[in-house]
Length: 116
Image 1 (cartoon, helix red, strand yellow):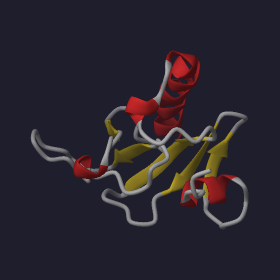
Image 2 (tube, rainbow, N blue to C red):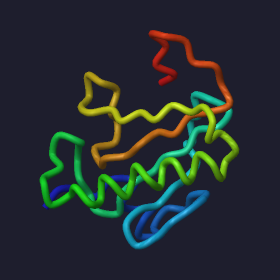
Image 3 (cartoon, one colour):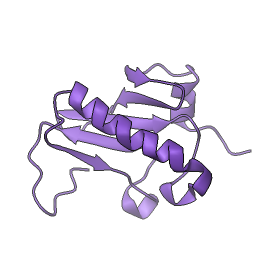
């Protein structure tokens, strides 16, 4: 069995974090190294290492994450303009191999700027 990620430890309550939202399927926490004034992470409780590792069985979970990302952006006051980022793999900037979405807002993003 692979080693638990920091996100699994947060989900299990082993590491404290500022939890903004959670339900049976996912958790939303503040990013500890924000790249925008509003920067939170939406993390499925099921440990999927990368987006490419998701299967058809994960389709409902992925849809749930997308809907929740919009709901959370609205609740944080950035529903009209925010960036949603999923890094897939080390070369793409993924540092924790537990699928997660970055919700970034309160910043003007220009074409070509990744904000990450």
